[in-house]
Image 1 (cartoon, rainbow, N blue to C red):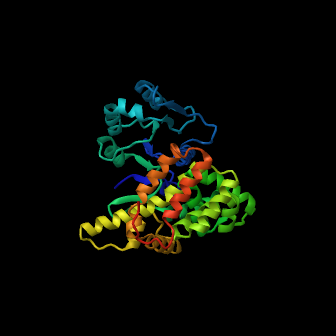
Image 2: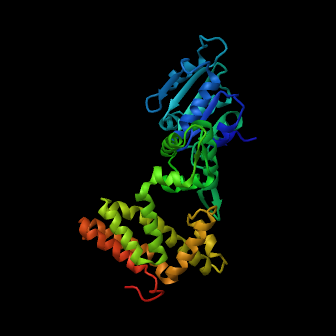
Length: 362
C-alpha cells in the first residue's frame, strides 16, 4: 500500500499517526507550511514544545542522527528533527538515508522538506513503504498525455479552506473567478481570501461580484473585457478598453503579459487540433481547447472560447504565436516607448478583427 498522499488529502485526514520518517515535497511553500504545522501538532504537546530545525545546505549526518537518537525530556514524546530545504542534504547523504529508512530510530521523527523528489529512486520507494510522503504541488490531472492543473479540485479545496480557516462561505463560481485572477499561487490566494472574509463578515458569503470588486477591481475586469473583445474580433471595443487602461496608468508591457497568456491558449489549441489531423485522429475543437488550458468546468467560458477560435479561423489562429512574438520583440525594441507601445498592441487587435476571416496575412 502506498504511503504517498497529496497535501489536500493529508490535511483532510483525521489520523494523526506519524511514522519515523516523513518527506514533504513540492514547490508550494504554503502547502508545505500547513503540512509541517500539522505534523508538529501531532507529535509535540503544544506549539512551544522544542524541536530541532536544520538547514539542508549545512546539515551534517552525525548531527541529525544524534538528535534523532536523543530521548525527549518530555516523556513519551519523540524527538522531532526537521531538515529544511533538504535537497542538498538528500543528494549528499542518499546512501545513508536509504540505510536509515530500513531501520529508523524509534526515539525520533525525521522530516525532510524538499523541492524535488523523484519517484523512480530507491529512496522514494523505500519511504513510500514504511514512511509518509506528502506531495505539496498544485493538484494535476491527465488530459490526453499531458498533465494540467486540476482547477476543479483546487476550487473545491478553496471552498473548504475558506470555511475552515476564514469562517466564510466561498461560492464555487467565486472560487473559479479568484483562481482565474490570481492563478495557482496558494499564498496569494489565502491572502485574498482573508481580505474577502473581512468584507463578507463572520459566516458571510463571498460571491463572484465581491471577488471582482475586492480582488480584481475595475482594472482586472477591464483587461478581461479587452481580451474577450479582441478574441471576439471586436477591434473597436478592444481599442476603447485599451485606451481606458492606458489612461489609468497601466503599462503596455504589463498588459501584454496578460493578453499573451490568454491568446497563447488559442494558439496551443490550434496546434493540438492540427497535430491530430496530421495523425488522422479525430478531435473536437472543445477537447483541443481543454488540452490547451481552458477550464473544462467553466461551460460558458469554454463555449465562448470555442466561438472565439472559430471567429479567428484556421489560418489566423495558426499565426497567433508569430504575432505574439513580433509584438513582444517590438515592445522590447522599436516600440519600447509607452507611446509607441500602444501601436504594437493596436496592430495585434486589428489582426484579429472580425471580417478579415482567412484573408492573407502579411
